Image 1 (cartoon, rainbow, N blue to C red):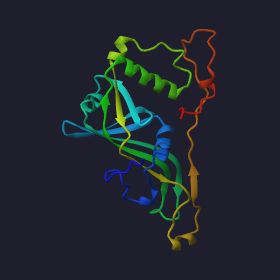
Image 2 (cartoon, rainbow, N blue to C red):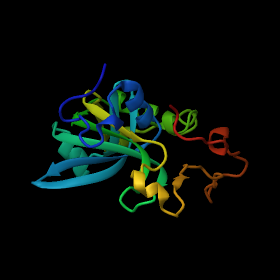
Image 3 (cartoon, rainbow, N blue to C red):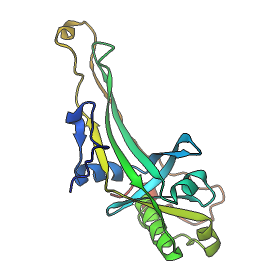
Image 4 (cartoon, one colour):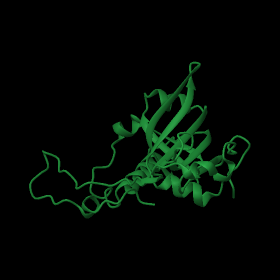
Length: 217
């Protein structure tokens, strides 16, 4: 089912817009940092935070005392954006320089997970998405920690993706300009893991850290 509404319809470069769940979920699942826009006391704010997806819902978590969570918990409108930069597009004209990217915009109202069981299940999914196998090794959240943590669920019911790929798009006469043009690709890479200075002796680095390839999709 498409997620297109009038609010999420791409107006600028509409051929780059996509509204199917496969495209939108693929972009969301490739990352774990979003920006959440909301209005608090008449002022706009945009806050970066981590996120994860379970089926047709987006989840975020944080301190129960945070402005972001307290504002959105009663059902205030929120705009969530996720962007991956895939390359610099260097054109022959200054005007046509661009960026290759994949982005998603999600609109809606979030709801607060009420029970510790719901929060624990959501945090389990988040941990396993970041590093599969990690949940079974760590200490689980206790009652005090769960009380201090809020988890919000945002239905993925109104969203759009926008994607740019490919080489520069120069004006016809600019192809005669005597300068280099093309794409400088970007790629996010993980580096070798660094053990904690206070790691107990004899604990090996797990495979999911040694061979980390990004969040599980």
